[in-house]
Image (cartoon, rainbow, N blue to C red; front, side, top):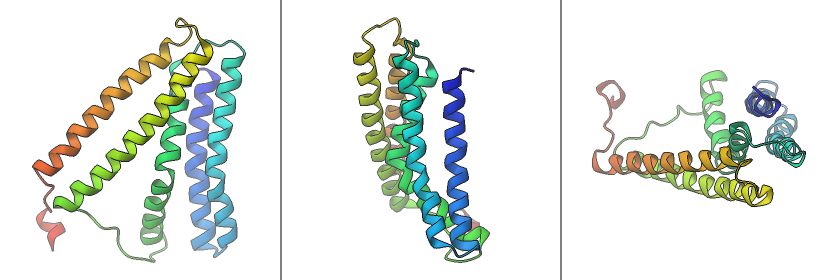
Length: 183
């Protein structure tokens, strides 16, 4: 695995470490400002990853799947970041600190609409990621060096399409509550 791939793995691990540190500071130690500082570090990780990938490519590296995944990671983090943190925050409060309300399980059309909102976010992250990937392809201007970027773009296009099909199935066959969840 090349160093850019390790940078992606490190940034992803650090993303969850700073989130957990932020929640721990906020809810366990009642240090709201410290918690906010930790949570504010999440976009810094995106910038670090962007710089690492950019420097590597500027030095003439041939793009790899790791470079393409850096663009995917950054776009997903930007579009889903706030909702991922809110999701984790709700669960941390309820399951770890025993505060707040139990996270809601969605069923029927409510679940379908919620999943559709998630698909819209997926589409937005795809658009942003595709713009980054396409920008890199144009910037490098060498199809031999950018094949990995084009390949990930093609795969991600298919994934967005499959996600849309899954989303539509929830409108056709709404998710039903299991007997134990209904009570």
